[in-house]
Image 1 (cartoon, rainbow, N blue to C red):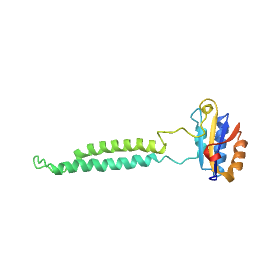
Image 2 (image 1 turned 90 degrees about the vertical axis):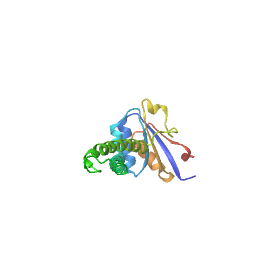
Image 3 (image 1 turned 90 degrees about the horizontal axis):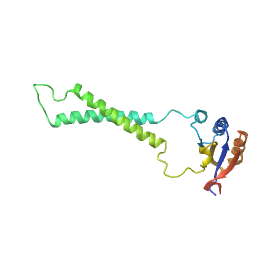
Image 4 (image 1 turned 135 degrees about the vertical axis):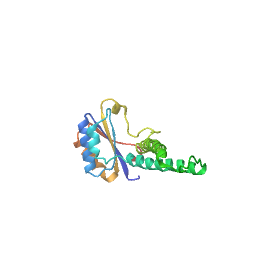
Length: 173
């Protein structure tokens, strides 16, 4: 046995599931997954997540886009000189438009890629522990923990109002 197990608790109400997540977080359980039939603000608040890291992806993509926009326009001008009436070959004011467009383009693309990366999409395999009742009228809380913490966390889930708590997956063997 690898020393880990998974507990799956079923809840009838949203606030009970949110309370269970909060209790598990206070008990230092880190690997928690919630299955819900509706988007739940209460469950999201119980996770106490920090701000999204996708913002960093957008920032870095925007900076890369601005730098590449400047590099493309300046490089093109230097490679193919077009001397017109004594004007400078590298003139930044017209290049700002291309720089801005490249910044927006690469910032947007990197934001979408960052979103898919951090949300683990696409999900190519089914979620372990998912049951069809979690898509209808129940909330499910799946927690992976050490085998030594199993009884304590199972008690926390039952105290939070779980209708049923079961051990699931390969880790429960």
